[in-house]
Amino acid sequence: MKAKFTIFMFNYGILLLLIGILTGLCFVLVPSVFSLNNITVMLQQAVVLGLFVYGLSFVVTSGGLDLSLYGIAGLCTVILPLCMTMGQPLTVAIAFTLAVALVCGLFNGLLIALFSAPSYLITLGTLFLFRGVAELLCNGKTLSVENVWLQVFGRGSMSVFPYAIFVLLGVMVFALFVFNLTAFGRYAIGVGSNPEAARLSGVMVRTVKVTCFSLSALCAGSAGIILDAYTVKSQANYNMGFELETLIALLLGGLSLKGGQARVLSLFFSILFIVLFASLLNKLYVGAAVKQVSFGLLFILALAYNLYANKVQDNQLRASGS
Image (cartoon, rainbow, N blue to C red; front, side):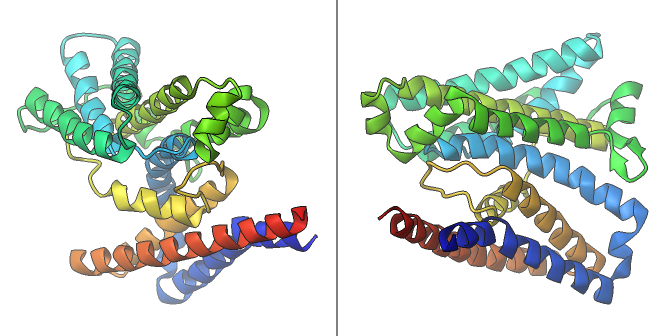
């Protein structure tokens, strides 16, 4: 019973408490954070951040780390308007953009499987590769995204809920389904926990990892499309800045960077915390340097919390199993 309570507190309780404290600070310092318009803006930001977080969570659960997500998203923000400029209908342009993202994910996974190298080294290289290709395609220029339906999807909302929020909710439900109800989800957790044991039990470890990188890339591609829909213009480096926020969300959500764990609902709460924290800083009109310091400190605290929480949970599980 004690072990279950400890796990619940570290998975949800402390994070919900932090959200409550931050919400109280917002009401005291800048009540306009909770204006209807700003809530919509925060939810729009949560969609893009959430796609990065859930995409990366597939890879981290399987014991890897994908740093190229942001390069893939940047490439997709360029591919979509280029397709539309060539006269392709929106559905074809979106399908082709997601296909490019999928190819990038397969490329990452196959390189890692081929060289048996640490995934963070391979994807660090492909991050710059994908960003460089995006810069070449757009020639360093801003591309316009002129499509009424895309603009409605990106900027429209029902009450305070942007239409794009349903994409994030769909990905979250998909992640819950995969990790809780499918053999592949169990394989991914097993590969992340102990790849050699998984291999000996008959799991195709390389196939699982390639699939996880592919799912991650599809999420990044979706984020790139939604960024285009929000901004109605495209640049290869629009998604720069999400890197640190994504890692903070993973850490606060309790996902172990060693792999072998799946977190879905707690990641959703950590995403909300990050966008609320960022909105508070924006409403306080702090400078860029202060924002960098704030997120840097938050990352360090989140890392310390994550390491301690996972250590305590592991000890509780061992004690309850003995």
